[in-house]
Length: 303
Image 1 (spheres, helix red, strand yellow):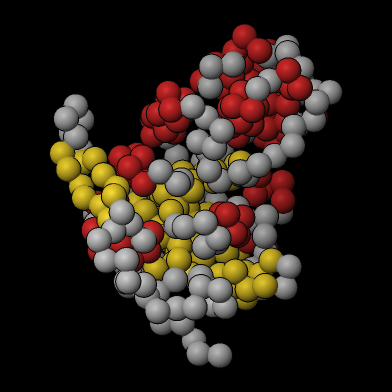
Image 2 (image 1 turned 90 degrees about the horizontal axis):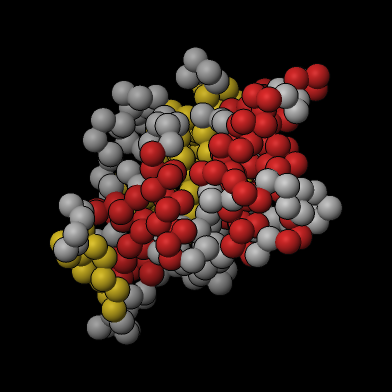
C-alpha cells in the first residue's frame, strides 16, 4: 500500500516551533506522537501521524465526521494504544517519557481525559461522581477531607452545578450531566486536559462559558470541536484531521492534514478542501478577533 505523504504544517505557532515535527519549541512539549497508526475493530482509522502538543497551549482538533478526531484524542490520552508508532508524555520536569513506561495511575496524575459520551452511574450523587477525579491525586486515607470537598465544590461551581452536589446523577439533564463530567475532569487538576467534544449537549450560552473557562485555565488543553467559528476564537493552534485531496475516504485511513494558527488553518482554501463548504473570515463587530462565516461552496464539483 502506498505510504501517505505527510502534510506540511500550515504555519507554526509563534514561539512554539513546528507543532508537527522537529522542534519542541521554547515552552517544551506536553504530548508527542511519532509515526502513529491507530485501528478500531480491525479497521485502520489513522495512519502515520506525527504531532507535538506544545506545553501550555490550547490545541483544537477539527475535521469532518468520521475523520478520526475521537480516535486521535484517545491515543493522545493513552486510552487507545496505537498499532504502530509512539506516544510520549511529559513528566513534571517537562521530560518526555514513552507512554509504555508510565503507569495508569501516574498518567491520570498528568492528564485528565473526558470522552465525548460517558454513562454516569445513576446511584452516585453528583459530588461523589466528581470526587472520582480526585482518586489519582490523593492517598486513600486522605480522601473525603475538607480540602478534597472544597476542590470538588470549586469544580462544580465552575460549571454552574455547585447547588447540585448532593443531587443524584440520574436527576441531571443531558447538558447538566455533561457539565458534571467536565467538572470531574477539572477536579482532577492535571497539567494536561484532553476533551472530546466538550461543548456536546450544551446550549449556546454554556458553550461560550465553558470555552472561556478552559481558556483561562492554566496548563495544556487539547479538545475536539465541531463549531469552526468557536475553534477560530478559542484556540492557539488547530489540528485538522482528514484526508489529502483526491484520497478515497471510504478506503483510506485519515491523518493530520494541517496544523497551525487558527486564522491560517481556517482560511478559505482549507475550509473548502477539508470541510466542503465556502467560508470567509470577517472582523467581529464586538471582539478583537475574526469571525468565520460559512456558506455553501460555489464549486460543488471540487473534491
